[in-house]
Length: 360
Image (tube, rainbow, N blue to C red):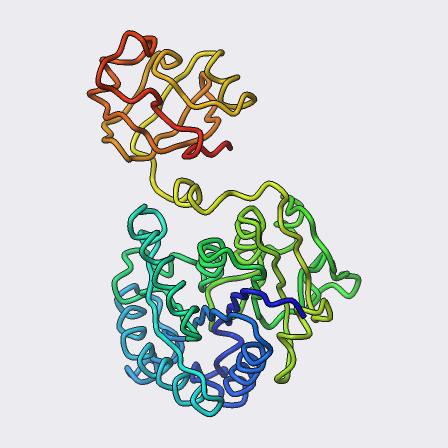
């Protein structure tokens, strides 16, 4: 089998029992499969939920806390329990894990995005298994990544993964809820995620986790656009991940997009925009169809206060057509917009270079 870089996401419902504690049978099954996958020569990155679920009972909660501070406290306790359990179990196979906690800002900030990539690359080069979770103890929004579904997609794009495997307690996407509709049919292969499919997934989820099938489809869509194949489903035994790579998994497969967003542009799609640029018809055609950069001459107005290196949205009248990293501050652009490049001195030629531009 061809060597692949694989990101495996294990959700809370697939890792814990109904009491919110780590289920030893599930846990050892997952680690055995991960070790088998690595032993077959593949590079393995694990995105693991379960910190909040593993920690809330130790804080005296009878069920998963609903407040942000409760979840953060549970994560602070549960994360150490979780990573120690992984370290002990992986040691049985001669594998060494590394813990990495991330927040959304690690993907939206250009320097932190690059640093995360370099750290993960070094760990993989040294045959370490990175175990990634959201840094719940410092997150200001409750479970930002939706039970780590989107986190796993972001990681898979960041590291140029060949495959993202999202393990859950439902064996793929159905045309209706299979628990309530006996006529529900599973969809085996998806090449494009539509609004209709998102409707199929509405309302699914578990009491232990926070991400339902809609969350997983959103994650799959991002990963596909980043050039990553995706599998969502279930499996049992030490060979389950290898079977999934062999297209024999119990779930739904998603085919990667042929027009993947390059890694150096992915952070542009994730960060919060600092302003808006309004451009004329010629600039729209150059960006949308000519593969060109955005020049000062094509801009007739802007909104917001931004600095060089910030991300701004670009508008054709009232429609946002994309976004990019701006090479001018708002103050500099005020003096330059509408002017030809030969009218400018000591200023960048491009306002947004095509290598840092992402179309909607």
